[in-house]
Image (cartoon, rainbow, N blue to C red; front, side):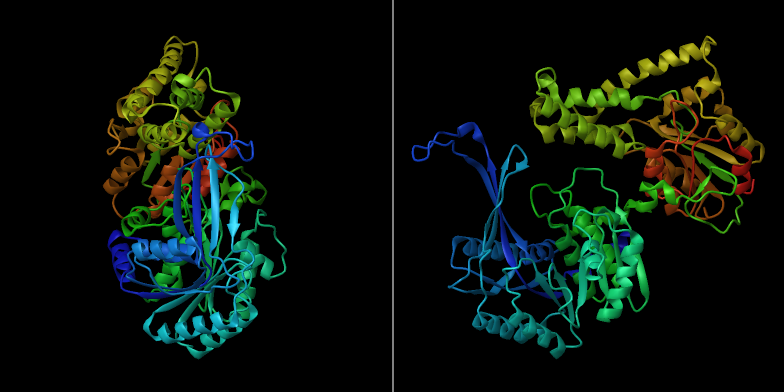
Length: 632
């Protein structure tokens, strides 16, 4: 989605009017610090002092909170609270946030405000304390709530119906009354997000997750059980026939699926490198999707906006996060998507070019006239830097633990190691400076290093590069002495393949996230720099300039707009795949085993397919078949 288009959509959203009726809750975050703990005189037990407390809207309140963060000016809350302090705090938060709470009705008997107290100790959530589980909505309160809603429906563009808890407002009597309201306003858009009663609200658009959709169709899926894409499609078709109304089905990191009179459409999931907290992500998606429909946009645009909003909020930890228009713009202007998750995670469904090990992920028309070939360097051609992860991982662990490196207990050390390994796996293929900026976030996340001792990204990159270059220089010296050969430092048939393309008149480009002078030096040492005829690009030391993404943009810009059928990119990192696909070129993922220099690396295969690779190869051993596939 282009920036101007997304800006217009976000501007249009600010003018809509939305009513939200449902189970309004309050989330209480209590952060315990045992440093000030004492033994209670009354119980002889250690106290748990709360160092910090935060209160935010949950349930239907989180939907309204997301709408408010998106700068929607007219948001009307319809729900029930008790006479307790949590209810007063909810009203206070709403007023401060710009949400109209006049239709939050107080029921004095048999009702406590739904509140969820979440104590945290050392970033771990302890047993939650719940309020409101024994609520019983009276018919009188239900009638008052319905009457208020009917009065204001003509003034709003969309009504969102939220059902969050079994003990909320959705008793049988209320549900029947609400279905009558939906029928009374057939031209008004109602959107239901219900944990327990999706089948009930006839006449409304549904938003649900894949597990809920599967269970509604009798598939009996547990919350943590995988729902296959084929199962989601089958459920969508069945539910659309049942409800005769459009629906959104979210799939977590795998994106979402919509169905309406135009059929099924898929919105891929977003690739997010940082640590995520998915609590409230469904509410964020709903807020983005519903407001888009309220502004007159179709289901596809609504799904995209919902995905962008959720993509922002999942990166906000220990809270049901929200997304501002500026944050949505940052995520949505140039998003990185996750493609073909199921194929990526399960190679049993792989399809190959007959008689080869060349995996065809996405078919193309075959009418290719390749004029330009872009190559990543490390892991695609060269293996001089093979094992860089073994240098970066301990370097990151030392940086995160700082002076506590030797004294850290096993549990802390393992947590740091797992986070470091996870981060390296996610960021393979991006510029080292960006990885070092991420390292700084990890250092702050664990809090072992005082703020005034944290280096900038350039400082940490220097530490990493110094250690890496020791290994690289040793290998280059062995190569220069003849102790090791070209085949020891390049993938199988890689240089021969470069030569074949060069001889066929294809212009070759080398694009790397490594510092540009180092890339040029290594290509020269290994003896194939001349094949690129000066078209060797790398990072130049500034995180804002010449990252691999920007390098690829420069190359593709120089080639021109018509990349379709003319440009092919080879690489073992996600960046090359994504940026080539955005321009319509062919992306070939090199799932290389850098240690052996031939054979498949399953982890790379998974990563590359999710990044959008059209073809997967492990090396260039099947050179003639690959050339034939590319019409060369």
